[in-house]
Picture 1 (cartoon, protein in one colour):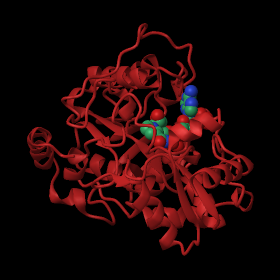
Picture 2: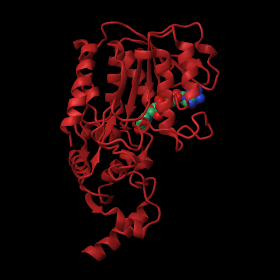
Picture 3: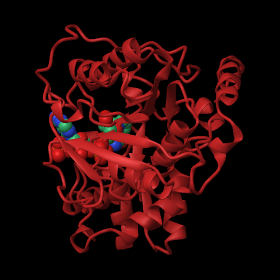
Picture 4: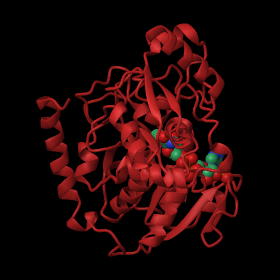
Length: 366
Ligand SMILES: NC(=O)c1ccc[n+]([C@@H]2O[C@H](COP(=O)([O-])OP(=O)(O)OC[C@H]3O[C@@H](n4cnc5c(N)ncnc54)[C@H](OP(=O)(O)O)[C@@H]3O)[C@@H](O)[C@H]2O)c1
């Protein structure tokens, strides 16, 4: 998958990144200097990982959010209340070493916070997405060669945060932050984040089904690539990068090489001692049988961009490391709640539909 062209481009960017980051970037444990870090957000999925890791490294953390999501989650962390939508007063008159912006979805919001914080934080780390890339991105692209996606009206805020123009809005947010912070802007572009606290079914669906231990319908092809990153790995690397002054965009996708769907699921099954049988069924066949196609098999949804084969050389060169997907799976299974098993309801199939389809498939194919 790695072409010589891509390797050439990335060796150039990786060398630059390595020069920017001393060896301490790779150290675990307590940071060599204490930072005051502002987290815009903090109480959703990745925010708690960032906050726990930063505090464990010895940093001071302040959160800024509306106080709606999981209030009281961090009784010992300073919480500033406000809204990205022009209610930023609680941030005024304060200084931090760095900000991690988890909650930027609209370019106007990114501009407001970047302008207000300029001169009051040294580094602005914006959590973007690989969705920021345009549709013509290829597997040969990296952070610098792939173009941003665009939207008709960049000022349109009519969609919800994760609505259809999510990607182009992330691209515009990045540009707003860079306009203000220049090379002190860091853009983290994750693909599929999972791990403890993952609110989606994208890995959890499979864990629930594997835990239940019976036959599982797996849609798609066995050798399609899939990239998951554990939130703990990603956020630890983000905090270490603030300690050592990263700069520019980083694709935050795992692992070293994309997993393939079959070894991924079989590895999890075997590591957890499950007796599940995985039955792979082609999407085209499923489409004919069921109208409600589930979106929880990310290896199928190659999407408009090859978003399961995104280049991560630059992040690897700046100290991003990965635990195994089996370890992530075991942590998540340990945290599954009673009601999560064994129903295995994903975004699409319920168990009843799944059983019906399996029966029909076996009757047809033997
Ligand atoms: N999950 C993935 O696979 C994935 C992939 C690519 C990129 N990302 C990006 O990663 C980030 C992940 O977010 P997260 O939910 O995990 O982060 P988080 O920091 O854990 O949670 C989101 C926070 O934002 C706050 N917030 C929401 N709207 C706000 C507003 N209008 N004003 C002020 N605060 C607001 C929420 O608190 P209140 O509700 O109390 O305000 C909450 O604390 C997002 O930017 C997402 O686009 C995620």
